Image 1 (tube, helix red, strand yellow):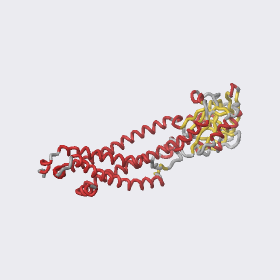
Image 2: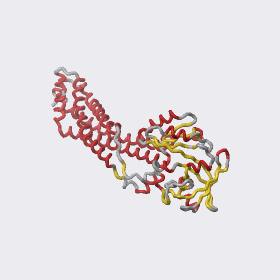
Image 3: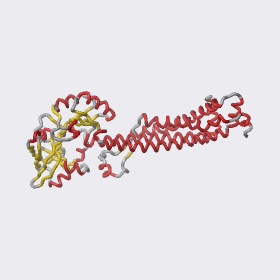
Image 4: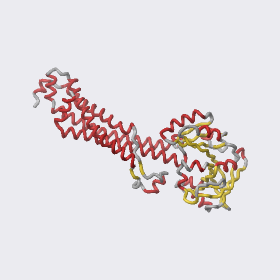
Length: 405
């Protein structure tokens, strides 16, 4: 059967190799595009989560519903030590308070963010956007947004007074020295945020071993699901954990929308190739009508003739898929190693706008889906196309077919 099917394919070598080449090209194009798509999604997620939000956050459930200052988590130090035992997880606390930030006679409202600078600078990219001064290292130093600095007329070394409402309605007051100015490109952040040491903000706002958030950063984003499950096992209500999908639903929705559009394009491409295969086997049916009639006159059933053609279609699809894989796998492997430059994608300003200023190359990500979807679809599509084309064999009358020239 194998020898017969192969010899039948070689009857018209040009048509066989053209059809196999079309199948191979579709496998190459779809596999490369899906790998590139996966790589771009990975960069998008990494850039969005590593900029400011983190891969996940642990907080009080009531703080998620209504982010009030008094909705804090208690015994944060013990909780942080317990969660830090999870393999592949980095964790650091945050306090979010609102107050009036003043310099001289100028004042404006802002959000005071108490952070662990030593931990956050190792994981978050927002601190790479410091345009003046440096990241604070002293207990009374602060980092402010560029727009806030312009509005207050503040510079490096100036003193800022922060007044707000602490725990249980007490008046909170703090004095910080501007150590650095950050420009993120996001107006709201640059205009309202003031980063200050966690301990200093906690003391000024009368918090005792409390925090609003614990930011989670996974060493490997692919293990986030496992990490979030282990975090859930170590916490109890009303403390909850949120991953980046809950924190930034627009990112996930954008990815799903883009994935759906690309899948439509891939489907259309594969359907076009399938039509080419249909055309090939329609020609086979017309050219070999007399041969099929002879088989049936010798006692073969129509389904046996169709099975023979299906076997030929299987060899043809395997030949095309093999050609595609021989080209696509080394190419994807090479691009995964060296990456694709992003110099022509709008320049530094466009990359900065999407918090991707540090990204210079995109690396295709080979996954099971990207590497095996196109080959499997083309094999099944070729079989279906051959079946649709040769189903008419059932209507062939052996005597009539033998008279066909």
